Image (tube, rainbow, N blue to C red; front, top):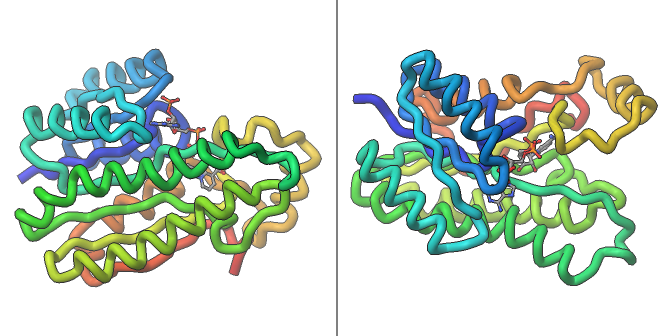
Length: 244
Ligand code: NAP
């Protein structure tokens, strides 16, 4: 039977690349977006035109009732959520001493509480079904820390701790929980980087390239598949060798 994946933050960037790959691999795909209605609709149309099974579902991952509504919409259309990809995220560059309380709260509300809301909303049915895969998107900065991104790095480190703990708790229900920690990927999140910085990042990367959304999507779709049934609680970091 065709499996269903919910990808949060799939209107743009890495999430969009995942939606395209999962749809092309015969999944039912729920494209979540928050603000980018136009981009989400464009992607939705593009995938429907290829006769793929997709829906778009608006919802701010910070908001529990919006997340529950979104999950219920997916249940009524596709029956289950077999794979949850917690990809929605924000970043911000700011000196530590300039990070406001609001900056801190927003970072953790989207990057950590959003993941908590989505996991709690889909897990009862996954536990009942005795199967499910959850893939949480962290970052290399969650592994190494990044200057001027203390709140982002801390939130992405929290994603790793959350993944490991949840994997231990739901393993008995045959649910795999893993984490993907991408290196620098060419998306709108990095539009603020100037050419010199991009060149420096490339030259510090053994493979001498930045990643694409597709590079991350390929790892995620593997973790979502039955080929990864014995993998749980792990952090896989596609990063071109930037962090070894
Ligand atoms: P992006 O291009 O900026 O896209 C971010 C996505 O997250 C958008 O689809 C956005 O949706 C969604 N989003 C943000 N806040 C949301 C909310 N409150 N509720 C629902 N969706 C929300 O970012 P990206 O580069 O693709 O990043 C995707 C993930 O990979 C993030 O978790 C990021 O931290 C991680 N990552 C990225 C890189 C990189 O170099 N790009 C590296 C490591 C990790 P709307 O536009 O519809 O609001």
